[in-house]
Length: 152
Image (cartoon, rainbow, N blue to C red; front, top):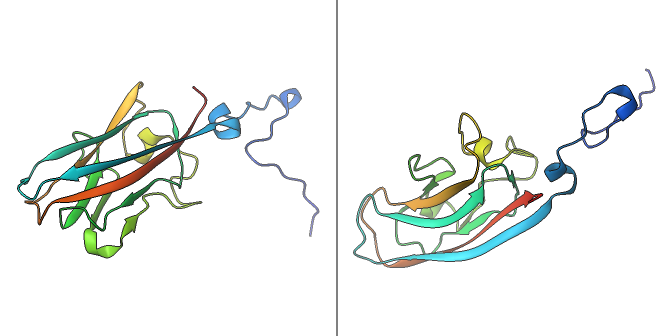
């Protein structure tokens, strides 16, 4: 078997013409947005709750988590304004917390626009929303942490 010396995608050799690594991935600053959203027991189907605005080119982080145990809807649906389930669409009963990203999953090292399934980077910010697919089952709240890496 040959002895091999390899390198990660964070290492580059300018003499060999290697492209420098993306600064967000190599030395990005971790941003954690901690918030909560509430609903009333009378909220109906197609209600929308604006959670946060995220830089479209920010790198997803596995610390993103939603505490859904007290959410007032049977289904947890989180996405963009127009793509309701771009991030998450699960039964509330599936788990008390939902993490849309796991370390090393298919979205590892991707920008938010890619993880949300957009065709290209829209630039600027992407707004995340929780959506109601049916009437509320009761009043509730959903604490969350949205985490990402950025060089801005």
